[in-house]
Length: 85
Image (cartoon, rainbow, N blue to C red; front, side):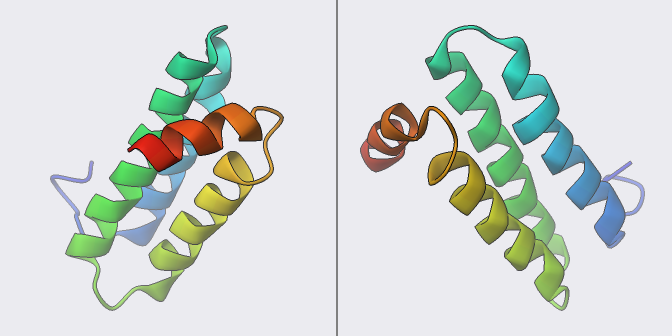
């Protein structure tokens, strides 16, 4: 969908949420969960590239980082991995 309509905000937002929140929780190991969280954040970053006039994507990226890296139950482990990235 992003290839067909790269300027459609909702597609980027929905899929990034799906990667970071829905898919990531399917894994037991926090390394795997972190990898999926970061895939969602990277997906949003790609969306920002295609939608430079859409500040909501930047806001969502900040929200994802704040919630998943800063406040999640695994925040200690995620912060360590985030710092290493």
